[in-house]
Amino acid sequence: MHLSLRAGAPTLGSMRRKSAEQETDRLRVLIADGDPLARRVIRDCLGTAPGFVVVAEAKDGVEAVELALHYRPEVVLMEVNLPGIDGISACREIVARAPAVRVVMFSVPQERDIELQALRAGASGFLSKDTEVSSLARALRSVASGEAAVSRSLTSHLVTALRESTENGAGMRPIRSPLTTREWEVLDHICAGESTREIAARLFLTDDTVYSHTKSILRKLGVHSRAEAVIVAARLRQPGHV
Image 1: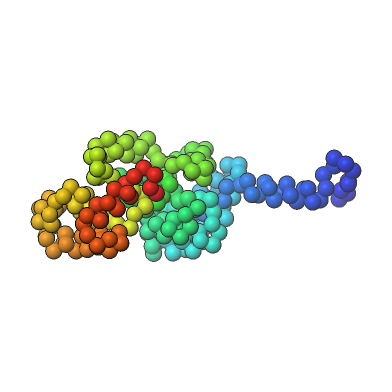
Image 2 (image 1 turned 90 degrees about the vertical axis):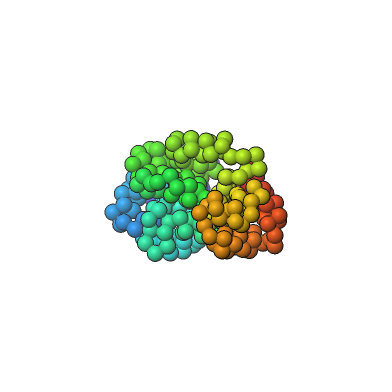
């Protein structure tokens, strides 16, 4: 092959740089799904969309975390029901150890609580496996640029929950938090000034269980009193907190 070095003609170096730039512009995706057929279908679908490259595939949650930390792709597309470590737990570990990596949960239609758990674990979206290829590609690009990928019904649910939340933020949950859903429920009642006995009655728990949850809340938030926990909870619920 003859390469002309005339002014204005492409050189070997410029061709290599252009090739490298094109590779850099491609959105790198990690696919995590326990079903090899599902992984192949997703890989083939993304292969038909311009600007994507599948850097790796994971068959379980442990592998998903390891590969995500190794390759640091722009987006991890992950099934909820993974063998070993489930998808939500894997998502939580990935975003904690590699905040720049965006995780999108990808599954058959799930209960609303599962979708919310995924968002609280740090997922940037939750998509159905019924999603069309063009819509999937568009959603992944949006997530890579910092947007969220959620269905209209889930968006509507989140808006309703925000409207129904009280002024002190009770009922609101930050996307990333060390507390479990039950611990946030207990903390909501602590913020409302309720006693251990009152919280137990409202949540149909024993006093000892509420006391145990309260100890766990204080430990996870790094505080020593209920009053301090209320202050930290208010800070976690602020719009700018992630």
